[in-house]
Image (cartoon, rainbow, N blue to C red; front, side):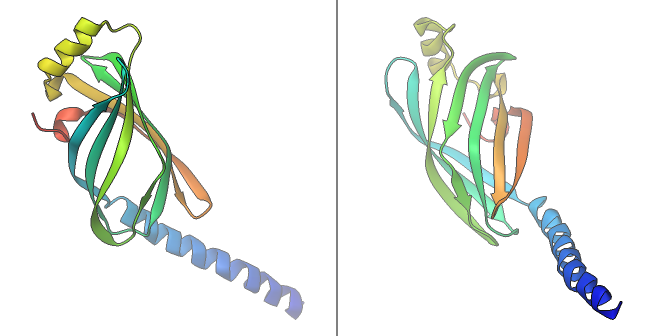
Length: 158
């Protein structure tokens, strides 16, 4: 009996400690802040495809983590006009840092060239929102994240 109790404590104690630590981490993850987002350059790769080099300032009080399967639908006044994807991104823990990385952007097939040029010429961030989906990992543990109708004007200035 004593051995089985000892074994149960040996198994459950690390699980309880892990749960306790993860609960503390969850609160830290809620404090992560994107403090700035800048488009540094746009490089065309065809008529509808672009590489957009961006800088993202992140204040991360939580442990380091990785974001994969990054995808965003770009909408103008509620209508989807394009898709943006990114390679996996590793976010350093417990620091404030600027991350520079490329995004791959593709305009929707139903947009004509005149519409694309008009969007570029008369860009008004208030007209645009994005639906972002990704998967965040700490080690091998992953969680899907999704943000719907994020206003572009909050992150990009005219």
